[in-house]
Length: 144
Image (cartoon, rainbow, N blue to C red; front, side, top):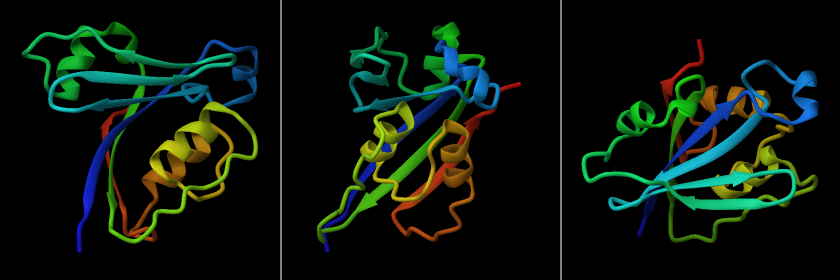
């Protein structure tokens, strides 16, 4: 059986939109980071655009800790490392009901659970006790 493994970094931040006042502090927005052994990429679902950026880096920045040290906006965030294993059977992506940053990130990493806010997604990912055998979550950094 062929298995493809993917590693993403889910970044939970305070957010800048007006509705962050209704959300848990520090969990107002989500960004996704990934590294392909050459580049760091950021997927940032905003209010009006889905921004995909190749981040500036040097050859020494190969770990998430290197990226955190260089980018000050990452210092006051919570970061989860999520490992996803996709086998050779079809992977059914969840449908997006409401287009929010949480819904888009869930779609990109294949989460099917009920979570509508960044905090709910954080709790879902950190409490995944192998209910979905294709997920493994590691806490890289917690917001102080």
